Length: 206
Image 1 (cartoon, rainbow, N blue to C red):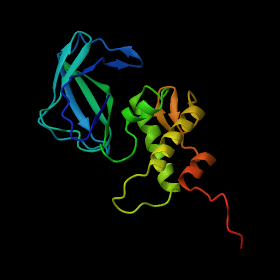
Image 2: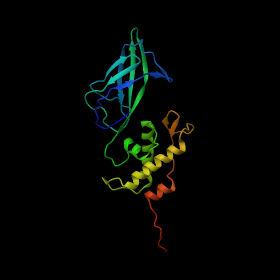
Image 3: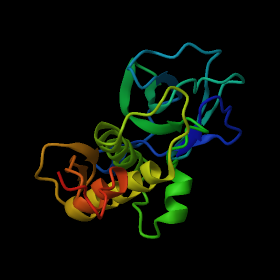
Image 4: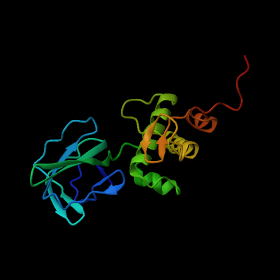
């Protein structure tokens, strides 16, 4: 699930609460409390979410104003309550929020240009963020407000693909990610470096 900064989603979030990969029996609960944390971990102030327990799911309706006010990964958390002081906290649902018009790849644009990109929004967002940081660190500095060159953007996608191909399914490295996949920063390869800092084929003799 992903949105852009400033969006007010029209579609409800349908959550199937689970713990350890197994669905939580919602019969003992009659109330679901919702909170949203921003990418920096702070609690987002809003007019409130409406949450309804329906069979084995919790349906969450967004507030009428935007709460997605910064890029990054938000965490939508549930606390289930029931009679007799029953109370259980559910692991948060993570939501990727992107900034439009930066000149860098968004999730949708990356998937248009990368046929076998990861289906997980969280994994792909991590790949693009790590790849972008590597490109910015190596490429020549841009003037303030200068547009992102095509070579930088292409280098970002190439680096994201390299990381994905190198580490796919490897959960042994210390890194970022989820499930059976982790995002481990990798050095830029020669092709990407040449793209970002092309060398003259005819060096001047001294």
